[in-house]
Image (cartoon, rainbow, N blue to C red):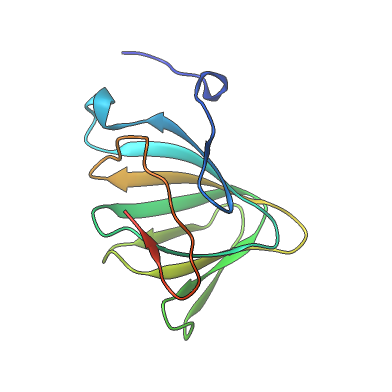
Length: 125
């Protein structure tokens, strides 16, 4: 058994926000947990080719879209979105507040991954 405070975990800048990797592969739990902040007014094209991800909203609001922006899902506190097929997606925080998520990855991330956001493609790891 162990505990870890978010205050003891460094913030990793990922392009349009920060991620504090509270639980990573080195913890041998079979999944990873991150505290993710998406900055207000940003849109991020993302894809996890090597991980399945679920994100539970604990603050703020935003939207997640499928790759071609034909499906929109509003994200508010208490809503989880699940990327169960390595789905490329667009994650947007509302214009007036940051979107705050608890992100769970399976298999676990190592903790040093970073997105590279470019125009015209999905940042992937």
